Image (cartoon, rainbow, N blue to C red):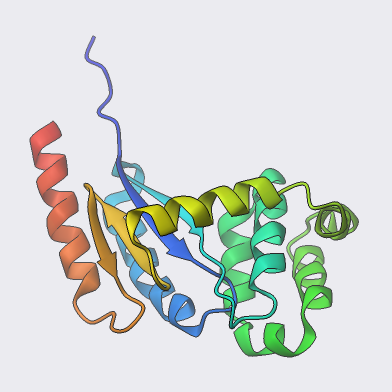
Length: 169
């Protein structure tokens, strides 16, 4: 019996108050559709200081992930970036309720900070490897910065993923 081929990992350094990360969702959806389980898209936190609610949103994502709906939560919050800028944490809790998550537990997680270590760890790792803005991707050891321009990034990711998958196959 052959062992299953492990997926190629695509780390996505992002934050949920970032309009550029919202734009990147189309590429991420296309990549997930094209590769399915062969590509493991990992959401990594890189809250930017200029976005007042990014840190709370990162913690809220972790609670949504713990409740089994990380990606749907990320997509729902990113769809409302401008509203998040205005409303902050109440919006994060509202989105959780809309997705059928335990909104009270998410609210409690924002208060008790139980997910701060994960968020801080992601941010520190991002800084250590050269992440400077969002979205930034890491695939096959290559850092691709989309914080200034996302043009052509999906194609570059696909070339790298195709190469990595061919080497494994």
